[in-house]
Amino acid sequence: MYKRALIGVLALGLAACSSSPSADTAAKTSDLQGLQGQIGSKDFAEQYILAHLTTKLLNAHGATLEANTKLVGSANVRQALENKQFLGYWEYTGTSWITYNKQTQPIKTEQEQFDAVKKADEAKNIAWVAPAPFNNTYTFAIRNEKAKELNVTKMSDIAKLPANERTFCIESEFSTRDDGWPGVSTTYGFDAPKDNVKLLDTGVIYTATKDGKDCNFGEVFATDGRIAALGLTVLQDDKAFFPIYQGGFTLQADVLKSHPKIADVLKPMADKLTTEEMQKLNAKVDVDGDEPDEVAQEWLTAQGLI
Image (tube, rainbow, N blue to C red; front, side, top):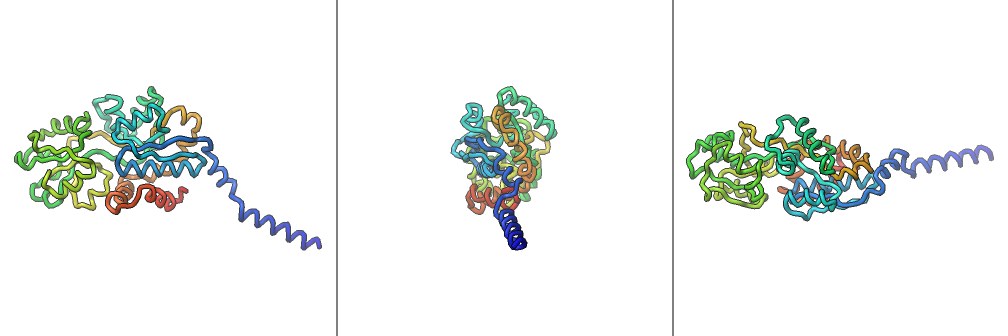
């Protein structure tokens, strides 16, 4: 009788161990209980993916968040954070430093730039956490065959071309930014006639550059998956005009103060987001047509993060 009772107790104990979550899992799913709100994004694939990655990962640790990918324009998204409409969103160090903090001189090393912008934004009650390795800097690209024809490999080569070959496709926002067209065209002496510069939507620029009818040179982002997929050659920024656009999660400083584990939860994910990894993720959306929400879910699962 004693043996039978003992066996029963052991069996119950084993069943409890197999059906109940471990202490670590239970702690993991309750780290951020009470954290509510929206994670925002700018209006392109990389930002959509980052918003969903962040929302899903924080929710896996007990938060109750939703991704809001509906706003258009960097300034509007930043304003939504400052107005506390968004709990947070992924920003780029160069953008905040030059556009929002009005600093005209970029800092040339990644860590120094991150530290500088983090300090500058503290005064606005905005915190930076989870710096990722990817650098989504601006650059110019040209279709491979045309690059060979014109013998261009770096941006300073453009100024040497005949006027009819100095044609550009750029975004409307880029056309007025301090770290955009006014500065880069002056630095490199593009001297392009007004009719040689077409303002297009972000996504259209890649196909227009590949097509070659509207422009030879398209303003693109370094982490975009369409660069390789469309057979485009990225030109070297040989005068180092463009600042570093390292990705980092920006959020309300008060939220981070009340939920400091946000930084710890996001760090393992951020560490994996290299420029090459972001290119792959972006290609799934921009080239393959997958939904950002699904891309985020699959990647987090494959990486063992959720």
